Structure formats: C-alpha cells, structure tokens
Image (tube, rainbow, N blue to C red; front, side):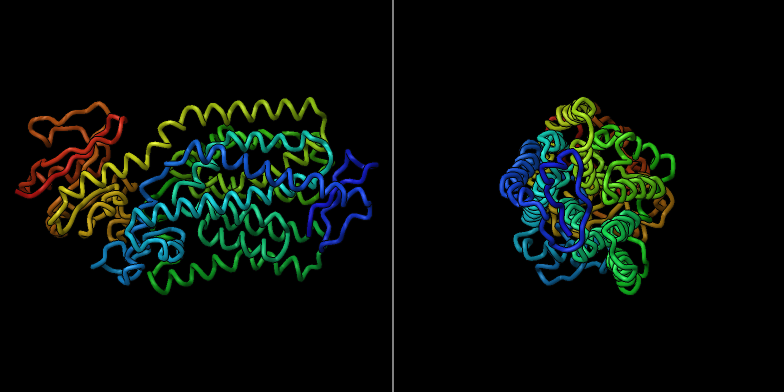
Length: 495
C-alpha cells in the first residue's frame, strides 16, 4: 500500500489510499516520484535532526533504570535491577533492556549512550520515510510546511534522544502509516512496550486496512497483529512477575483529572495538533487520514484514563505526532494557502516557545547526571544498601543494592499507598532493609539546616525517611549539586 503522486489534472486532490504497489496510471506520477520523493526524505531527515541536535543531552532518571537492568543482563546477572536481588519488572517496556544489553557491557552509562543513539537513529530513519510519504501526497509546496514545524518540535526530538524506548516506539508508529501488515505488527510492538497505546494501535492498523478496501479477514488480521504483542507481553509478565500490568502502574498511580489536564496541555504545547484543525476540509480527506485522526482521538482518551504522565515534554503523546504531520500535509495539499499558513504559524509559534523555554535546561540533564554519578561514586564506595527515590542515577553510581523508595523497581514498595514520591513506608523500613546510606533531594534555594533533619526535602516520602535515618544514627557526609538548577542531593551514612 502506498501514497501515489498526483496527475497534472488533479493537483488539488489527493489520490485514494490504494492497495499494493500499483503505479499511478499517469506518467506524471512516476515523474513526480523522481522529482519529489528524494527531497521529501531529505527534508524529513533535516527536520528531525535539527531539534535532536539542539536537545542532545536530555534524559530522565528512568532511562538509567533500564540501563542498569541492561548492564546486569550483559554481565550475566539476569533481568534484575539489583544484581543480588530478585528478578523484577523494573522497566515498563518489557524487553527494552534486552535490546540494550549488547550495548551495555561497559555499564549503565554505556547502555544509556547506546539507547540514545538507537532512539535517534530510529527516528531519523522514520523521518526520512515520513518525508517520502509527504512528497508523494501531491504537488503543492505547502504540503512540506508541517516538516518545518517538526524542525522546531521539542517533544518528538527530546524523547528520541532521551535514552528510553520512545524514539523506537515513535519510529514504529510512523512506519505503521504504510498500512501494510508489517506496519500493523510494528505499531503492535510499540503498544506492547507502551500499553496505553493499544487503542491507538488497533484503530490505526484495522482502520487503514479497511480504508484501503481490504477484505474483512485482512482487516481482522491487521487488528490482531496490532494487539497480539501486548497480549503476549502481558502473559509473560503474569508468568514471570505475577502481574499482567507493568510495575510502574502500581508505583505511579494517577487519576482522570491529571490525565485530562495532561492531554489538554499536550494538544496545545506540542504544536503539531494545531496543524490538523481544519474541520471544513476534513470531508475532502481520503479515508486513511480520517483513520489517523480517529486513532489520535482514541489515544488521547486512553491517556486520560491512564492519568497522563509525570515526565516533561509529553512523552506519551510524542509517538503519535508524526501521523498528524502526514495528515497536516494532506490538508495543506487540499486546503487554501491562507488556512495552511495560519495553522503553520500557530503551530510553529507554540513549538518554538516550548523549545526555547525548555531546551537549555533539557540538554544539560545528561551532563548533570554524569557529574552526580562521578561525585557520588567516590562517596558510595563500600556501601551495601542505598535508599533513594531517584534510583536511576544512584544505581549507575554504585554496584550496591539500591532500595527504591518510589517502588518502580520494588514490588513491595510499589503496592504501598501514595504516589511514587509519597509512598507511606513503614516506620521501621530502613532498619528492616538494613540500609546504610540514604540519598535525599533538597529543593532549589534550600540549605542544610542545623540539625540536619530540619532541612527541606523535595519528596514526601523523604520526610518519612528522615526520622528513621536520624533514629538509626545516620549523618550527612556529602552534598552533590545538580548543575545550575539550585537543587542538591544530600548523602546520609551510618556513623
């Protein structure tokens, strides 16, 4: 199934989504391919690469959780966050750590770098494919304007280079627009790694097959391919870890109000949804684009039900944004130049604001984390059990067992009441876990007080830990500033 070029007498209309690889009946279609498609692919690559270069260095603590599991796999310790601990479902995308394992022989930081490169390369390849498809949509130059918005889009770029699975998931969701069986399977794998994407995957895969006039059997097959990987992943989780749902679902509970706010903010600040606000042109769109819009709506509803996400720059929305770019290009081909320019200017303005506002801080995250890891590694020599909320960077700084106060790598803590930063841990938790070091985060602008336990700390669970640490006789031994953010990590140790 492919997007074919426009014949000269139909330049203002998009051709139908057609089955197979049939060539256009117009010779101009073939000529159009030769002239337009390479430029489309090149524009896609450039548009994807520019913001990734601007945001290279962005990451999140969870990426280092995956990296530590991958490093243990590479060392032969198994699927574990702590080498001497039990096998745990510490990574939402089950199997992502396995993908990273060959890149993790040098430890978690090497695994993180490998994951960043893999995500960036995957998205670059998908952006080339997307540009090719946009090039085939017609003849108007305006159809390439969505790629200019992509060139300033922070969410897609940031999560492509973050070291998490999002870059690969975004690439899989993009090539799923092909409408072929392998595209349905690809978006199914994406949904297996990101369970909230199951509705999107099914609507997109089955819908594109139906829009192409495929038989009911083929439509059903594509729908099954889109959901089967998630079913298999759930079954594996149930057998190996005793739960169909990822551990993060228990560790990070949310609610509908948070999910609704998250989606509303994403619709505004990701910039790209603005490009498809063209209700008067919708009726002229080929069915495949209506399917894309329906799948996007299904994804938004799923995110509301899932409660959104706590990470910045709309990680859960980023993978489906490239599909909207394709539909935005189709609208530009069909609609008026004035309407296209208005949408483009609005989408670009929002994208630039987000990129300028968050870009400088985002690109410094990796360097800040590496500095933390180097400093803490010296102080954590000889540690046996270290308790922390931000376990990713702590786990990269030491080979000791890390006691997870957030529960994302610890099933016992995950089921405790509270969010992942406010777990109601028992009063004797540190003693029972035989913790000898504790890492606490102090908010921006705060200073260590006398006595130290009167200091301000960022997370609610840390305030519960402080009293226990004081009773055990722990004392501050080091402070680690977090770049230029004003925040500081405080390290406690037994006397």
